[in-house]
Amino acid sequence: MTVKPLNVLIVDDSATSRTYIRKTLLLSEVSIGALNEAVDGKQCLEILEKNPTDLLFLDINMPVLSGMEVIDQMKQKGLMEKVSVVIISSEGSTKRIDELRSKGIHEFLRKPYTPEYFKEVLTKIIGEKK
Amino acid sequence: MNYFERQLLSEVCLKILMDATFLFTDSPEKPLQPDSSTPLEKIQISFQGPFKGYLQLVMPRPLCLTLTANFLGYEIHDDFVIQNALDGAKELLNILSSHWLTVLGGPDAVFKLSVPESNPFSYSEWESLAGHENSILMTVEGHPLLIHAAHRCTPGK
Image (tube, rainbow over all chains, first blue to last red):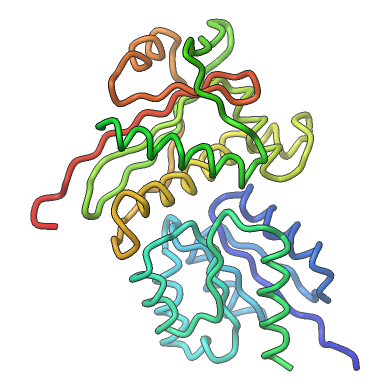
């Protein structure tokens, strides 16, 4: 069976963090189509509107527009049903993580995380998409 | 910070550096002094929630390179590491502060963190801050690392 390549968007204000996500994504051997990056929430929404995206890796604590604000705007635009959102953040508050889950995110990955755990999460999402 | 809070911050720092960069930290009885000819960087993040305050890391610039390189599994001479050494150190401070605040405030506590900032720091400022009761001195890969934190309860929270 041929698996459709995933169009991915990585959003984090830290270039180091974006690079780490990109590295772990490529290590996970998942078939990737377009791979876009954004440095804040505003840029993220602009890319989402212009480019079909299957999977969004989104940070929370960012300048201009936070990850939480991005999710609220994605909900308003009906994008949460079309895009699998994985929050990658150092956030540790169960209250805030529950709030994110209630808004429809697929997974939450707390920094720092291992490439093995990243692959596990990705495999789960791909399984749900089939 | 009281003794317990200092201990907590040291432990969280040790764990995060180990998990994220595979680097061990050490707290020697006689802490290392930075070389006065090596530029120092201060990385700072502030937070608001049940507690309000800030967390700072002060380190020689070569340690910023080491931390970023190890975080990504790159060499310290890699162009990306040289260009993003401060960014990597800021990202590590962001991770460290989130984990510290979760331990300090409990799993339900919600904190709003600032975007980390960096500024050059002088050798004389290091000497002054190193003696402060809210400072912790560590050694990472042969480099001195100064952690400084201040926080107070937010009224009504």
